[in-house]
Image (cartoon, rainbow, N blue to C red):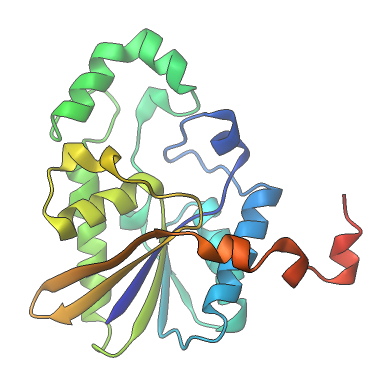
Length: 217
């Protein structure tokens, strides 16, 4: 089974360096363009299932990808981003200034109890639970697209690679990147590729904009 883990497109908060957890921030113009390029990547592939978190930036990305497939998009809260409590909506510099000890503790201990902040271990547990549910719903020859979030995806990949969860920042998961996971059955998962972004350049903006869209500033 081919499982394609897709991070949502860019938001204004991504550009501003503002940490967004479960705040429902929507895609900006660039994020929509990124999602369109990702849709082109999957256009000629037979997709058998599409899943997304319940947050709008992921849902919109999935809807754009789905324009060529007309699948029922299944929304799963277990795929949503980490609930980062009072850190949500703040720039990292501000968090480091006011919550440095809490942030370091949260990164170091995956079961850290920080007021209002979801532990990394809990994020991984629910995200992996979602992947296992998806696998049970499909056949081994199926191809599945899962649209989620940077941290949620990194916890899934850390689980597949069996690396310590607090090392999840040792690899990148960029906006609308695709990480390809192969499920071989018998609980065996293989990471075939990580953080692919070639489609963003290959399917450039001029490739898929209509003449009317090209007129829009």
